[in-house]
Amino acid sequence: MSLSPLLQELISSLRALPGVGPKSAQRMALHLLERDRAGALALAASLESAVERIGECERCRNLSEQALCSICDDGTRDRHVVCVLESPVDLMAVEQTGGFNGVYFVLKGHLSPIDGIGPDELGLDRLFALVEAGDVTELILATNPTVEGEATAHYIAEQLEDSDVNITRIAHGVPVGGELEFVDGGTLAHAFAGRRSLRRGADD
Image (cartoon, rainbow, N blue to C red; front, side, top):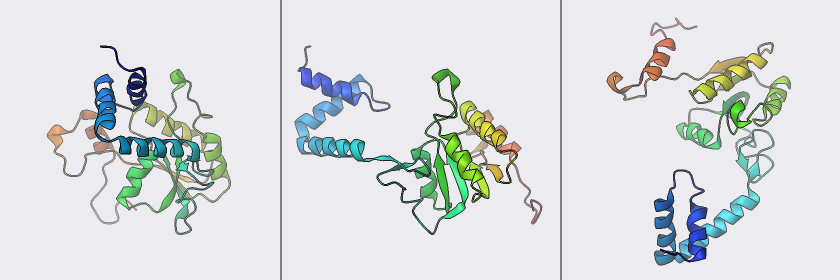
């Protein structure tokens, strides 16, 4: 079937979204055109505005419309503790827990030489400069528990081994409410490796 050139262009554009294949893109395009043209116009306007106005925070590389994102600009945050993450979506996940009051540094990826992603692409020079400035007391490496994420965390720790900063790695283990029989071997191995004593004061 021959489609309208504009319709075909819309479908192709929607395929730029992660996880959206040809059929899904087609359903989205037809829905917007047949049932929600006002919503389509609002979406187009919001997308254009976001692309034109959202850049990155000068300090942490998080997505931001201002020179400093709202977190870096928040005087109540503990600037001595910096959590290193792979992406803005990881930052959102940590923020939703409400359990972290430090600041962040967003790598926007992980080391992957085969893809041409090295230290420069991750802004590691800015991270190291932040540490060398002397205000950071703890650097939490919260990259993903993948081969690339582990390699990135190891590289950062190695580069800062002569600094006085306390470098920590988030624990990876059994999820709350999970049952051991359904946990994969890698996660279970991390859980055993990161076990801690339940005796009071034993970890001090």
